[in-house]
Every structure is written in C-alpha cells, then in structure tokens.
Image (cartoon, rainbow, N blue to C red; front, side, top):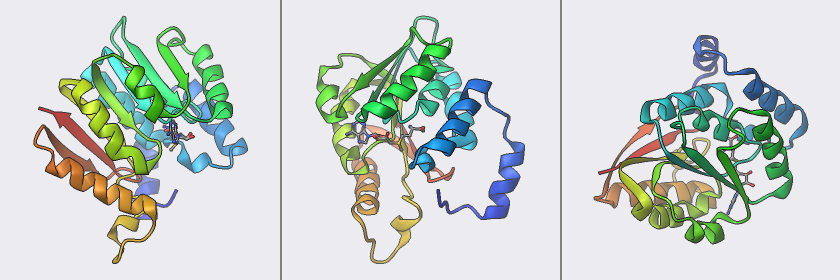
Length: 213
Ligand SMILES: C[S@@+](CC[C@H](N)C(=O)[O-])C[C@H]1O[C@@H](n2cnc3c(N)ncnc32)[C@H](O)[C@@H]1O
C-alpha cells in the first residue's frame, strides 16, 4: 500500500504502535502470505486506531462494508457493548469464508454477523440504528452508502470512510482514475451535507471521520 507518509516516519510509527492480539496478527500474517490483494488489509496502525475509536464510542451496533479477511471487523468489535452486535458485509465468498473462520476463533463469534453479497442490495434489508459505520468497499459506491445509511445513523453516531487519499491520487492535476475521482466526489458530498461534521485523519491511505449532528 503506497501512502503519503514518508517511509522513515512510517517505520518510526510502526515501532510506537502497541501490538494487537495474536488472532489479528495471525490474520495479517496469513493474508500477507496467501492473498493476492493483501495490501487491502488495514494493518496494525489503522487496526489499533479502529480498536480505540470503537472503545471510545462503545457502540451497540456497528456496520462494516468490506470485510475482506476479517481484520478490521475484529478491531471494531473490541469496543462493542456487552450485548452489542457488529454486521459486516463482503461480496466475495472466499474472503467471507476466511473471515468467518477467524470470527469463529474469537470471543466475538456470537456477536459478529457476516452477510455475503453486494452491500448495495443488502443494506435496505438492515433495520438497525448504527452507532458506528466503517466504509471500506467499492469507492464508487461511497456516496450511495452514505446517503442510504445517514438516516439510520443515530444522532452523535459516526461514519468512518477509508481511502480518502486513494494512494495520493486525489492530489493529481488532473485527477485520473475512477476511484480517485470517486473519493474526491465523496469528500465534496460530505462537505456539502449540513447534517454532519467531519475531519480527515492522515493515517495510512487517509480516513474521514464523520459525526452525525
Ligand atoms: C479494502 S477491502 C476491506 C479491508 C478490510 N476492511 C480490512 O481492513 O481488513 C474491500 C473489500 O470490500 C469488498 N467489496 C467490494 N465491493 C463490495 C460490495 N459492493 N459489497 C460488499 N463487499 C464489497 C471486496 O471484496 C473487499 O474484500
């Protein structure tokens, strides 16, 4: 994963971040060794950030779009309240199967609901009020996800959107590529929405932390 963070600073930060639980390290090691798209995994910096954000919010309902091999879902689940639940949606069956095998090994096995399919089709069937949403799937659908989910996010609930820098491509002039363009459009869409306030977080590929007023 290319980032805008200089290599030396990244290496320094890697030394400072607390290690994550063994199961998360197992997922990262396996994914990096066996998955052709391992760069998609959040990794320790972002993983620890997701854990702490969730532990600060203490959500009752979390929604993640883009499970991949289950790493970020397990980070986010660490902040759930006692009877809280995390829903996570993954389009690819093989990745979902791998993620489920890790969820089964975790203490959150009964509190994570993995839904397999296209999030755009699944979302209308979920009747929950979300305390925390993590957008980490197809970039060209972020605006659609935001519009569908905002009414279901509780007041003072949060949406975290990943890859807002899109490998630095959002800074190119002109911006090329559908994903970088989609992230620019998404940032503008959020900026224009008076129901939320937001702050970009320059971690890894950039996160947008959005609070519903
Ligand atoms: C960047 S990866 C997610 C990484 C994961 N959140 C993590 O940090 O380890 C994006 C995932 O979203 C899935 N995806 C893409 N489009 C989707 C859609 N429309 N519905 C559900 N999942 C989708 C991909 O198959 C891929 O596994």
